[in-house]
Image 1 (cartoon, rainbow, N blue to C red):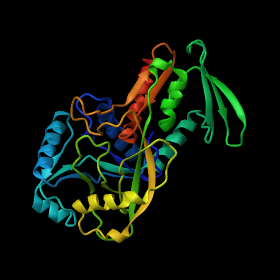
Image 2 (cartoon, rainbow, N blue to C red; image 1 turned 30 degrees about the horizontal axis):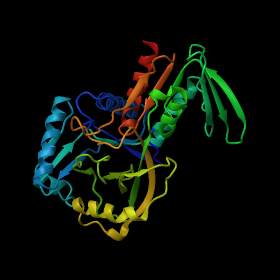
Image 3 (cartoon, rainbow, N blue to C red; image 1 turned 120 degrees about the vertical axis):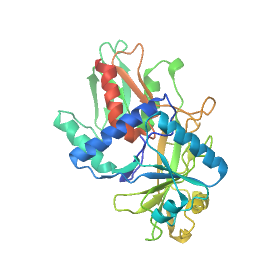
Image 4 (tube, rainbow, N blue to C red; image 1 turned 90 degrees about the horizontal axis):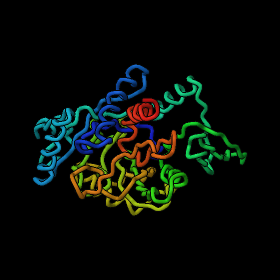
Length: 340
């Protein structure tokens, strides 16, 4: 899925993706499943909520539309008064309005993935890490399975034949799909690198996730404030289009514009304490809007499909945000495609 090296991840509420998208459907279901699993399995999480800030009347009007939309899909949001906002988060500046999403949270993503790995292996699954897939050959269009050629980290080559092939390879998913499907069904991958910024000071330190109002047509949700399970805050990600999905370098030129955006909602931030931290890359199906606004916005939904003419082949493409929040629901969807 999304290639981040972080220890915390946001549990998204599902408010940005339109009324009928897979992202909305699977985010809403996955959010419920995520909170339930974390509670049952002792996976660290925090239902800290999120604020979306409007700094002018145009942004306020957009938040009104977001609020109306969330009511239509059963996701709670509420406007909070300027007095309440100042009382709860005195360092956060919202010149016009604050829309609160109380079901947004954070989860210790490493502990979550460690649980999934342990559960998978306890059910007889075998995990082959640091193993490159060199080629996949559909045998009689999958009727006799898929021959998968691999090379391990030590250079050892091997192959297996599998009855079912689920392509959930994140940044490599589209190239793998293109190596199997005919050329008229090929897709172009897009790679959105995002830089994160650490903050080496104890003040200010909000206890709520803080997001600027989304910019129309933008491929991301703005350089927002997030936190880890200890309460340490970070900012990001921004969006930088790259050709190489392995380009995880942090770009010094991204820092100044990020600081300018952060200062719009956290004016007391100490600029000299904000530093480049790390970068990750999101697999996208296009360069359109991260928020579904309507026709022509370029919004790309998840692509989760049983490929016609290829027995037992399930493709999962463009699994970016809210991919982690949706992950358990995505697994249910794939199970349904295969076995019902």
